[in-house]
Image (cartoon, rainbow, N blue to C red; front, side, top):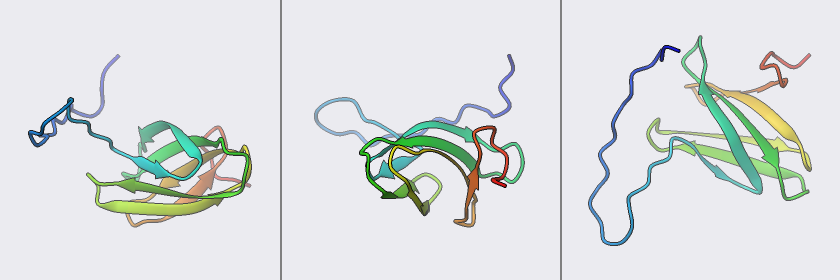
Length: 101
């Protein structure tokens, strides 16, 4: 299997305590992000998650390395898939990662 993107190292600042951590994407809500993959076209991200609190929620996804945030609403217990554009757009996708009809 060949990788289509080179490995990019990120420098973490020295600090006291445990090991430094780094995250490409952070979710703020009751939803847990389960998968992130780079889009083959357009340069954005495809993200899939599950709303685990059992309540309607506003999901905010933030990427510090990309300097971007995205916001959208989900239903209780919804398995959701979205394409996140570099311009801040959110496009809802089906589970096969095609546009919703």
